[in-house]
Structure formats: C-alpha cells, structure tokens
Length: 254
Ligand code: GEK
Image 1 (cartoon, helix red, strand yellow):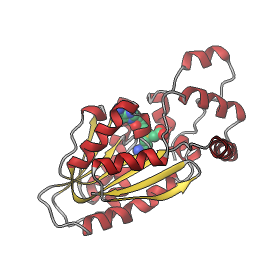
Image 2 (tube, helix red, strand yellow):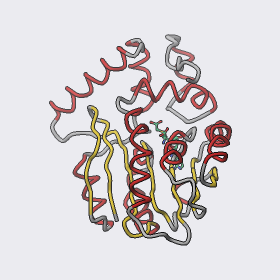
Image 3 (tube, protein in one colour):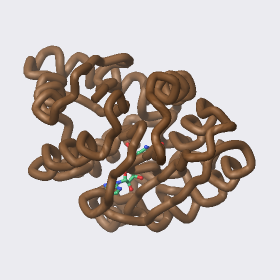
C-alpha cells in the first residue's frame, strides 16, 4: 500500500488557495493507490476481475499477428499488472502498453511494471496525451476512470479511435464516475459516496476540499450518454458489468 492520502487535510486557507484545481502531480502520484482505493468504491473489485476478463478476451479471439493490451490513463500501472495476470504466458505476440500524460505517474509506474516483465508479456510505458496517442492491433483497451478527465468535445473521437484500433471481438473496459438525470437520485448517491469516504477515514473538511478541487476537472456523464457514444462508435455488445454507487464499469465488445 502507498503512503496515506492527506492532500486535502490542511484547513489553512492560504495552502488551500495555493493548491487550486486537482492535478496529477508528484504529490498525488505518491499517495495515489491509497487515494483511489479510499475514494472509488469498487476499484479493487474491478482490478480483481480484470485477469478473468483479459483471459476470456484472449481466448475468444483468433490468434492475431500482434496483440496489444492498452491501459489508457494507466496511473501507477495497476490495470497493466492485473491484465498481465490474465494473459497466457506462452503467447509471444503480446504487449501491454500503458499511457499516461502525468510524468510523475509514469515515473512511479515504471517500478511496478518491471514486475510484469518477468512473468508474461512485453510491456511499455508511454508518457503522452491520450488525444495524441495511437491505438492499434488492440485485443483489449482498459480505460479505468480516465475518460472522465478528457474534455467533453474530444470524447466521441477518442472512443471512435479506440474502436477502430481494436481487433474484431476486442474488448473495451470503460470505468467511469457517472451522473444521473434525476437530481434526487444524484444527490442521494453523492451523500452515500461522501459517507463512504468518511467511513474510509476522510474528514468532512477533506471531503469538501477534494470535491471543490475536482469540480470542472472530472466531468461525469450519464450512463445513457456513454452507451449512446459506444453504440455510435460501432460496438456490438455494450453492458455495465460493475456498479458501486455512481462508479460503474462498462464492457463493450467490437
Ligand atoms: C487505475 N487507470 O489505477 N492523457 C493521458 N492521461 C491522462 C489524461 C490525458 N489527456 N488525462 C488524465 N490522464 C488508473 C486510474 S486515474 C483516475 C486512472 C482517478 C490520466 C491522469 O494522469 C491519471 O493518472 C489518470 O488519467 C486518471 O486503474 O484519479 O480518478
């Protein structure tokens, strides 16, 4: 487990103003594992199922020349490690590619990823903006809570590029924080989520300060909007496979 997340603990107004909007800098990277585990209910559950999804994805496809497994917005590489666990160690045409535009994340991911190298597929970490990155010969693309940080106007095009880069029968696993059209439902889930964070040891001040910092940085959409976008891109199977409060994961198959 990484260091404890205490980024929003300070009650000092000057410090708070200095911090401004949420960014994926070195400070966040250092505590990221603790932060995401205590903030996103079901995060560990998704990671635990990923080896099974990856194994089935690999088995359900005909052997292709090159099979890439992407983790877009890979942070510290937890998704890459989980996908690697599901892959057949005998397959020699497989590469796991992690992409993230945070230098601090990529730096800290490098050590985690060195663990994969001994076990299975080749792996690659790339510091790059997803809007400029290439997705090709993909068997599986994981976007675990990343699309929500991409500007709304770029989301359709990015999902279309992912679809185009997948082999047929390829998987996209898209996890997102969602919002609901109905205000009452929305507010009820927000309240439960804040209680979840309080139960994980965050103070009311930390919860409020994080909420302010992440506003306008993380832009959630409704499940209907996600499904519509995936349909328009061309995916033939689209289904949520995990939901914990407003945190969902959708499986889309080409
Ligand atoms: C996990 N998937 O542990 N280009 C590249 N990376 C980006 C961009 C962009 N335009 N915008 C944001 N990121 C991980 C968790 S965290 C989710 C993903 C969260 C990166 C950003 O640097 C960060 O590492 C990641 O997307 C989002 O399974 O913090 O809630």
